[in-house]
Image (cartoon, rainbow, N blue to C red):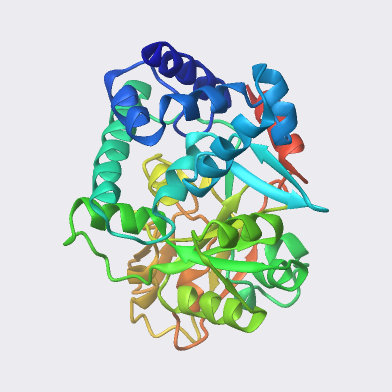
Length: 358
């Protein structure tokens, strides 16, 4: 029976999609048998698409709510489902592996033996899926970059979805947690440390409340959120989120470890599948040709040209503004890039855009 429930879990996670869907390979079963007890896998399999009460999920399974609710609560605390309370009622949903279950395992930043075991199992599964999928294909972008907006040319129209500050001001509560990508790497090899700050992943609103309630991160004030933002920008991290105007989380990514950036940068033309809608423009009257922008560019989109001037490879540029944020001479501003569509409004619109692109 246990084997059957995990095979059903594989089918369900395949339907959930995401960067790493369910795959019927040995690495999948090694991983899920560590993540899920059989009764947890059965409950996950029974959660319909969307958010549902424990009573509704129990009816789906033909069981009593008193039997199912404790399992759901335990799963939420383990990051195997999402629990959000509204008006005193808790709703549960079943996230995919990514974004969702994988990230939740490492957001608390703990370093137990089980954490290390999970890091190795998740890494092995991702490597096996990557090997089986082959090179990334051109599709509608599922993620996007949010530029360092203080470096955007004043004449440009800056929409709220292009400003991290708009999300900080709009939502309550706010939370911050450990960068799961960098933490996973260090759990596998403690020497695999790029030196970038770790506590910089941000969550907003109901998503933040879930992270706070389940002790995967901590609540922060708006002032602290801006401090996190400044720390990330000083370190040359890239603001990244799902490609929609309403977001629940913001990653601050390095190119050496973070899934969003690494996936895009493996593509021959990263700027076509991950972008902010902006590009850097140099003022060569102010530029000293110091090369700082070239060193900071996570996409390797800048190189010194024949006249000792930084030159831009637009196919590689993701429009993050890390180059501009690190220029001591204010020689770089961000200007609008033609041909980049605005992000879909919400998850439904994003899914429709992805389907249409296929």
